[in-house]
Amino acid sequence: MSYDWQPLLLTFKLAAITTLILCLIGIPFAWWLAQTRVRCKPVLETLVSMPLVLPPSVLGFYLLLAFSPTHWFGHFMDQEVGLKLAFSFEGLVLASVIFSFPFLVHPVQSGFQNLAPSLSEAAYTLGKSRWQTFLHVLLPNIKPSLVSGVVLAFAHTIGEFGVVLMIGGNMPGQTRVASIAIYDEVEALNYDAANFYALVLFAVCFTILLTVYLLNKKFLTRLGGT
Amino acid sequence: MIELDIKKKLLGAQGDFTLEVKFRIEQGEFVTLFGESGAGKTTLLRCLAGLAEPDEGSIHINDETWFDSVKQSRLPVQQRRVGYMFQDYALFPNMSVRGNLEFALRKGANRQRITELIEIMALGELQHRKPNTLSGGQQQRVALARALAAEPQLLLLDEPFSALDQETRVRLQNEVLQLQRHFGITTVMVSHDVSEVYRLSNRVLVIEQGRILSAGSPAEVFGAGQAGGKFSFAGEILAIEAADVVFAVTLLVGNQIVHVIATAAEAQHLKPGDRVTLLSKAFNPVLVAC
Image 1 (cartoon, rainbow over the protein chains, first blue to last red):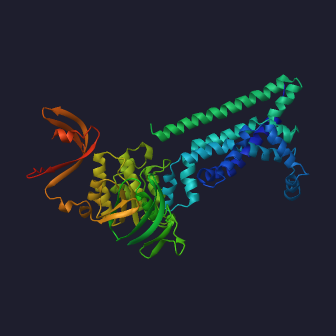
Image 2 (tube, rainbow over the protein chains, first blue to last red):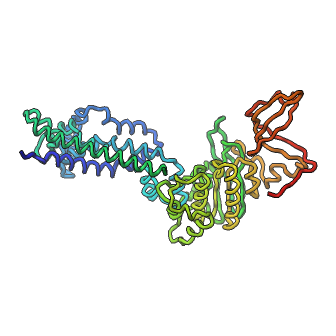
Image 3 (cartoon, one colour):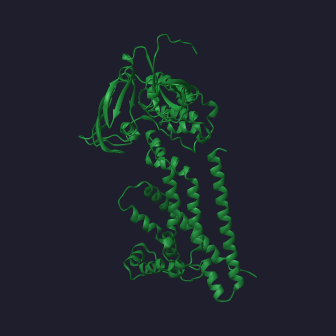
């Protein structure tokens, strides 16, 4: 019996693109958040953490409204940028970035916060710019947090269901990711196909997480010098 | 030559106070900022480095202006060319010993300096190790070598020996002194250890609650000039035992344990754990070379 791989491939494509975008925005943001003393920091931290506690359908609902062509944001993205966000893959990416944001930012931010401030100060006294310090001193020393953040964001995007359903719908090849496909197959009493998707997701997530834990253990042992 | 005249409000443990200091340091001097913790010594050092900013005042070194609140000028820490040794050494855990030194090199600097420093500091065996696998004393040497690798015009040491045991401390103090003379580099050190100040610096500024209380050579400041034939040691009481009409007191002085006799009146105010000063008149002390 042949299975349809498309939902799985779409899931991993979504997760990969989301994680990449998250790295580009989330890591610098986490760095900034770790050291900033702006007054609105608690508000920003709350906003970042909201997706952790908010039901996905709430976020999905508001995103759906915002993405609609009648809303100024959806209208702007459609007319000026040329992106139709509602019920499209691009919309899914944007929603996943927002939704997985805390999963990347939290570990990375605490990684930065746990570094002694003297590390970056030492680099500054040695004439290194903030950017050089970030790249050569800070990032390499929070590797375990980086790996955790990236993997959590990736895995969480794979597992996302509610938001995807709200704003993506169920369009094969466009927005029909594996988690939706499972639901769909179960509804159609296709337990066999559902089991296939579920098993692959299970195996992939298990392997990723196991790799992370093994890597982190190795890294910590190496730093500890034992 | 450094001329500094700054003011900065500080939050202290016993309320706020103002750091208000003015001094001048000549080229090649070794100056110690001496005082209790929380007196503002480290903040002063950080202001010199550019890691903290004074509220007002000015810092000039040779013909450069590092800070001037009137002219609104402030040279960033990166451009000040200071070698700063942090209390926790701040070695980069992801780089080897050699990597730490190489990272410190300025653009276009001669790599030969690294090899030279590794040789002087006897780091050859350790150069490919990661900092976290080194002992405290070894890390201290790497931190010092790294601070010097950037060819600083000013060396700043923040309690550089506080985390070391007595023996390592004395050895490294001698090394610092030799290096400082070898490179002829102006040095400012923060310390609250009298013996360290004596051994290393040619001038000491005693700082209390943000102000310079006294300044001069260590001998002038700590009053050795008037001491005459008296010894005084700082020690800690380990035990007090009654022995007939007097009390036998066991003291830890440096890392030696000594027994002395105390009268009942003296012993009344003492208990194990107290820090005391042991004074003794030395009419004919025996000096043995070691």
